[in-house]
Image 1 (spheres, helix red, strand yellow):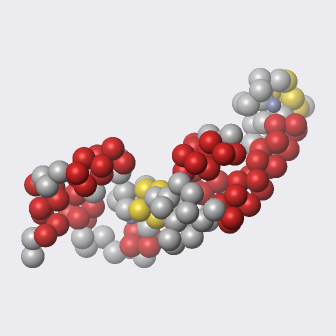
Image 2 (image 1 turned 60 degrees about the vertical axis):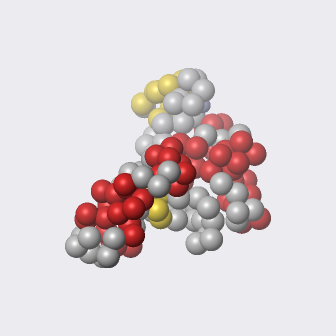
Length: 137
Ligand SMILES: [Zn+2]
Ligand SMILES: [Zn+2]
């Protein structure tokens, strides 16, 4: 028997594969997932912070569900996950369609978009060189 400490509450529990959480935390997490799923369905316009706050769940956890493709945001949702390869905005999973289908021709444009929201804000506010370059033909 494999006894471990629950990653969430620290309690000792009998580990038998899967996620390193005790039964009660696993159950709580599953309930949380259903709650978040429901919330996202009813509030398609909610962003990541709002979902996290309203459901008292960490953004990291929400992202984990999305990466597992359990949680899917609608295409008009403001939520942007980053493709792990190019940083493009995606709705679910780990990679954008382009990377999924193996179209890497325009890698140069990927470098323009840094996967950081704070940087995006700066670019939107200023008319800096990074923004100008998008206008080049
Ligand atoms: Zn626990
Ligand atoms: Zn990509």
